Length: 303
Ligand code: UDP
Image (cartoon, rainbow, N blue to C red; front, side, top):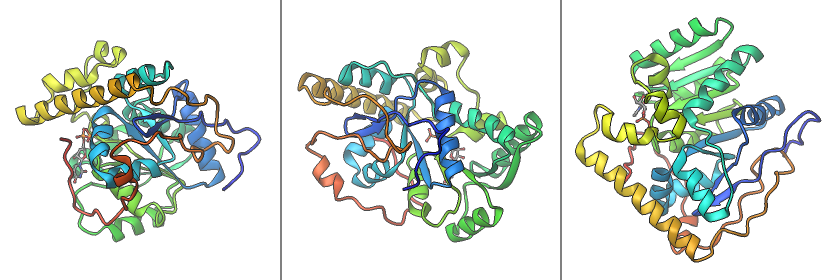
C-alpha cells in the first residue's frame, strides 16, 4: 500500500449501511482531494456511488455485493443513504452524488492537467459530452473516449492504457459499470476509476437533471421516478419497491441495534482500505462467497 503524501488528506472512515461502506465526505472538495491523493500516489482505486437501489440489489446479488466491498470508496449518492446513516449511526452524512462529483472532478482535472478517459453512454451522448466538457473547460485533456455499447472489453482496456489516462469515468449504468470496472480494474493502468451512471447524458444535454429544488433537497430520485422518460411503469414500481425494502431493512437493523457502534475517524492510509466493520446479516455469508466473474454484456436489473 502506498503511504499518503504529507499533503494528503485522510479519507473518512466508511460507515456500513447494511454492510456496504459509505464514506462520509464532508464536502465535494474533500472527496476531490482524496481522489487527487490516489492519483498523485498512482494508487489504483475504484469509487462507486451507493444508493438504496444498489444496496438493495447487493442484498440479493452476491456478485454485486463483492464488487461494492472491493470498492475503495462508496459515495453517499442521495438522501436515502444519508437518511440510513442517520438512522443506523446517528450521523449526519452529506450527500456526495456520483453525478455531481463527476463534474467536480472534471473541473479539477482541467486545472491539474489529468488525462481523462470517458467510457460509456451512447455514441452520440459520449461524443456530445466530450464536446460540451471541452467547450466548458478548454484545458481539459480528454485522452480518449469510447461509447458504452462495445463488443470487445480487451480492446477497450488497451485503448484506455494506450491513452495514458489517469482518470477513467465509466457511464454504463448500474450495476453493469461496477462489474465492468471490477473485472478490469487490475488491467487498467489508470489510478482512478469511477462509475458515473447517467452523468455523460447530463453533460451532453441528452438527459435533463431534476429542477434545482429536487437537487437541493436530495429528492432527485422522486422527480426521476415520476418524470424520467423511458422508464416503464414496471421500472418505476420496481425502483419504488426496492427503496421501500431498503428502508424496511434499515429500520429493522436500527431497531435491532445493528450498526450503531461504528468508530468515527479517518483511515490512516488515505484510502478506504480499513473497511467498515460489518455486522453479520443473514444474506452476508452467502454474499461474501461471491466472486467477481466475467460480466461482459450482462445487464442486471434492480428488483
Ligand atoms: N449504457 C451504456 N452501455 C450499456 C448500457 C447503458 O453505455 O450497455 C449507458 C446508457 O446509454 C446511459 C447510462 O449507461 O448513458 C445509464 O444511465 P442511467 O441514468 O440509467 O444510470 P444509472 O441510473 O444506472 O446510474
